[in-house]
Image 1: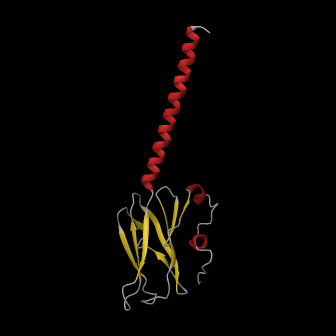
Image 2: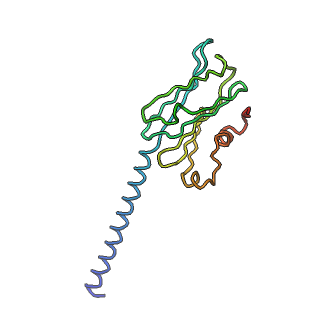
Image 3: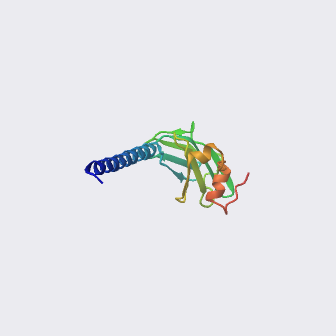
Length: 164
């Protein structure tokens, strides 16, 4: 091979390395952008004495907006479910849902989940015992995954019956 041939090979190898680096940068940027859209919502079941109904307190540690935030739970053989206010919870925001239809001091510990989407339509499901499920938007939008609230609850708590 001549010097010119080696120069061509070196230039092609350099171009391939540069293209790979550029593609890696694009993928990293996309991953970072998606992470900025992810909500980080936590909830707590609280009771405030014998005369006040229990409450669910939701907090979005962010950085993304929680879209369609709703919950489903069971305590003492009774079901509780609903939307958190209008279904949206901004990063850093906190909302309290008063469960006025439950007795002030329900028996036992609750089993509950809360579900929301991010702005990219990915589904995030959490439970009060610390479990987390993530469903990619491909499965949510093409309906290959059953995303009904009752099915998400069954996935998280397969041994708990929901009284309908």
